[in-house]
Amino acid sequence: MDHILKCHEIFKTDFVRGQNCYLYDSKGKKYVDLESGIWCTALGHNHPRVNRVIETQLKYIAHLGTRYPNSLAEEAALAVLNAVGIAGGKCTFLSSGSEAVEFGVQIIRRISGKPLLLTFQNSYLGGYGSAAKKNLDEWYLFDWSASDCLDEIPFERIGGFIFEPGGSGIGFVRFPPKGLVREIVRRVRQAGGLIAANEITTGMGRTGKWFGFQHYDIQPDIVSLGKGLGNGYPVSAVAMRREVALQLEQDGFRYVQSHQNDPLGCSIAREVIAIFREEDWVERGNAKGEWFLEGLKQLEKKHTVVKEARGRGMELALEFQPRQDFSAALAYQALLEQGFLVGYYPAGNILRFDPALTIEEEDIAHLLEGLDVVLESVN
Ligand SMILES: Cc1ncc(COP(=O)(O)O)c(C=O)c1O
Image (cartoon, rainbow, N blue to C red; front, side, top):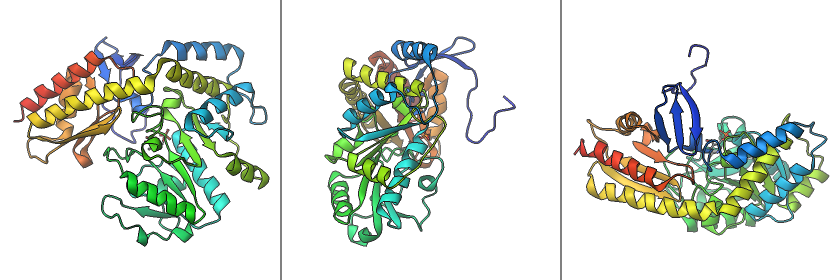
């Protein structure tokens, strides 16, 4: 693998096939994927209905110019708006999560005309653009883990709050308190600002509800979706209240991107939402997540090296005590050898689990047994 730029860690280069939560390498060895790719395949790899929609749509049309969104975009928009609870709103389909978050940021700046946006210090908002850089002349970063004093926030200068309800992007799986989030939302709104939810990772059932913001009983004005929406295909979406959309339209707002509202991406998004609804994956995923977390908590009780098991729905983490002879990196390697792919975050000494909601319970049970063996060797 000499011609792929190494801009992050690469551990293995020979996965050739996927099926639900299983990945197979070129020698036929099977692995259980507990990361859903990078938190994307919420319904598992190689999903037959998603595949069928892709095959069918390819025979009609994959791509159209931005001036010609067809009825699939309208149908997918209705499905997204219905899911995020913004009936009557408007939607645009893009390609990546970063783009969908940045789009929300740009429209808030445009509408509010205010200099600052507010977000939590450790939220990951994307790979590029203003949201990735979070320059302090454009962003007010609030560290909710260090302070609950909101009086220091200059709400009158803030155009909007970009809320990432998982604290998940940087991997720590720590959830901001409900009261604090609700109070921030109240004060931002009172000062005339907008609320945008970054649901790239937490959306599509990941945290046990359709969307992470629903744990906070708030209704954002703008919601960015990605990852699970395409189940591995790169389609993202930005949904917004009708008033926000009309203001942008009247204001002459322009945004053009080559794959905006493409029929292929829209057909996939529409189908993925339909599968979620018809097969009840939010509820079913949540039930499996609760059971999985219970298993991780048993490991926490049994092994002193485990500092904490935590999570919501199917976004789970195991944090380890700092030790000379053990780390999350070592646990990751040991699990990989056993055939399990999990997330690991050296900075927080954390293993992370975000499997497809469609994972078999027996695979979770095997992972817990495998972890037990790894941790047994440490005590
Ligand atoms: C919380 C969050 N926001 C935004 C993004 C960016 O999404 P993408 O990588 O699809 O651009 C990610 C990606 O991991 C994410 O976790």
